[in-house]
Length: 189
Image 1 (cartoon, rainbow, N blue to C red):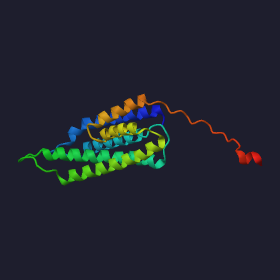
Image 2 (image 1 turned 120 degrees about the vertical axis):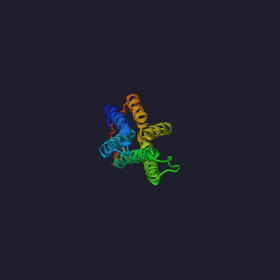
Image 3 (image 1 turned 90 degrees about the vertical axis):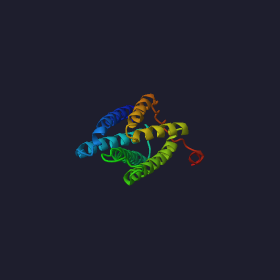
Image 4 (image 1 turned 135 degrees about the horizontal axis):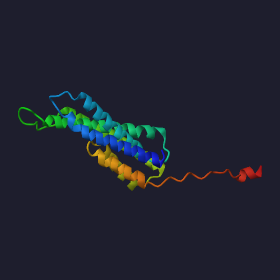
């Protein structure tokens, strides 16, 4: 992916995150059926997290497993965290009585799924970043941005950070052409 493509993808992801955050309060009703709005918000959050997962890989080439794995795992984490957040907020809006003091099992399961997906994706990015030659400090900063990008409402900050990183990234110099020079064995023949 070229630098310009990264910036464009980050801006599209940021727009998805903003629209998802605007739609998010509309999904928290127990009285009105909000399935359509919830589905649109969840898909936008999933797409924004997936875009962030692709952007983190940068402009250098990586193995196709990393190119597919990191965005998919980021999207799963984003979807799970959004599900956990919305379920938790809905459980706090109790019409009769006090809000529950413990987390609902659905919230805990969604948090665990999101955390595991994020950690596996971060590990994959660690391997991809090592093969790309990205410094450890840079990888940690990018993984913190990715963590923000998969958490609902905070994903605006994460994707805005990726937009900034896209503008600040230096273009990758193409690898110099390697010409075959005859070695000592070839010269003696």
